[in-house]
Image (tube, rainbow, N blue to C red; front, top):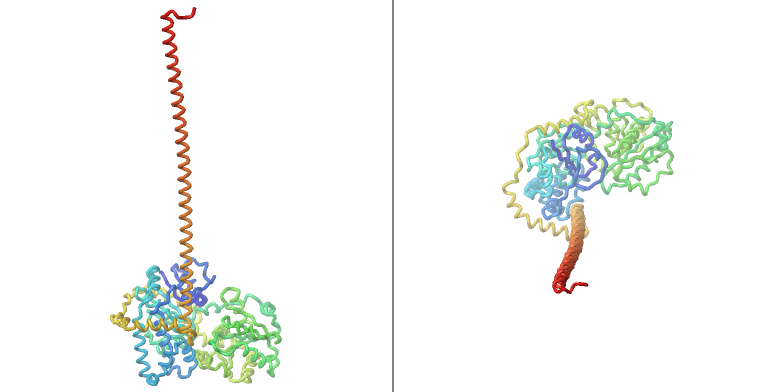
Length: 582
């Protein structure tokens, strides 16, 4: 089976590594299409897996599509479901052009009825937008049997173009939900694939209720990205691990895992220092003397430039993204040997639950919108009885941490949560197996009829063309965009302009090289021809010399024969006249 795997960037390989390896081992041909040009060594040694880059050139239509899609994503967060999550709406609003935000604030659009009417109009506009010729070319060249798209839920995502093109070419389509927060805190499922693969029943409800996906298209497979932490054992002893990180081996250590959070979030690095100081203020000597291992989040490393932990005893800042075997061992042993794990709002909570460690967090005012102000955070407190020990003050937090250090944790303490959220098909059934089985099952299904655009779409495009031209003009005109969408569109233009310039330079260099090769070839031909002419002239001169020599010899011979004949005649005459010698 030919599988096209569309992802925003190659960082998603980490999430789907086990799935891709299993599909490749089964003999499937896999082409990864990345929206962003990245470099990676992950899976680079698997011949069945290749990747290429989207080469979508900015145009009036693509820029209008970006504005329409981010506006639709923004309007989604005005639904009653997000009434208690204003920060999510604000975060999306940062990406919406100011003019569209002002329209959204019109009094008439503050009512659900008129706002939903606007959404219906914008969805019709989105359906009428022309398909991407570059993505269509990918489909023609690769001819996939099945197209997997992930995450497609990024705000204003253009991966919808991949799904539309795949459906237009009659390929089977599958959307894979990549993380626990994608359905609740990201963009829309703006076009229906044949199947949507989710982790658990919680995400089934999200897909159906928040995105309008028919329940019969949603398939629960579990969270394949966490399979690697089940049944794993440490490579090093606790003493070796602590020695490597300069942590005291005779005392417990707390693991603090930093979060990705959102842009414009207060600096978590500063909070971590405050948290350590609060822990060290505990009346419990065991908690007060516990060591601390802090794992910074790889996307927020710069915030540690202004925060120094070196004056704090038995505190180590260490860790990187677990992408290779060494970094995975480091991460797993950080969890395995820790006495408890602490964070704000991170997927490391789930990994700590799999390993069986106590999971703690504290709700503080500066981060509460990034915690309880999100929908997915509450799953950690409700699903399967919950996994988080949530404190609302440092006093309560210290009490909970102290209890975790003194009370042994049952091996199955988080089993209900893990069984419900991570492996709902059974704790002993790897989610990778279920994912691959679902992909292969869809691959065996009858191919769908190619999608055709609505009959009214060309007429609506004629009406929309001035809006597309105006959008293109606005992108060029705004000097300091206040929204991230225009900023990204301008960056895309600059990247495209840069690529065009580089391509023009490459073509010029190629033309110069070809001209130089042509000149060299012409000079070589001329040199060969001149050498041939010289050789021909030399041969011709030699032949002339030979002919002249031969003619001279023949003349001499003729003269010699004539002289002999004359001498003979004269001799006869003399003899007849008696003039011979006496």
